[in-house]
Image (cartoon, rainbow, N blue to C red; front, side):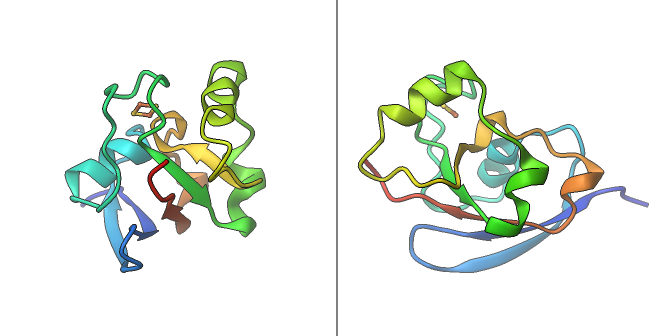
Length: 110
Ligand code: FES
């Protein structure tokens, strides 16, 4: 009945879990919060202005997820100590069918 997609998320404790029914159109941050994924604080509520929703996207997914926009890029620069080439703000990743199976790891606090 559900048209949800599958996400494989690793939290800041190193625990990996699969979420089977994430809603298309939600942000990755919203789904992580709904599922109490440890380490996603999302202090700004998804406005791309806190970086407490920082994740590392699985290498294989990087191209499909796409690059950060200018505002997100500026936020990621502020967490450069823990930034990686695969860094994204999960509030800026809008879930679509193309992201079914997406893997991401929550970045450590900065
Ligand atoms: S929730 Fe604040 S930047 Fe993503």
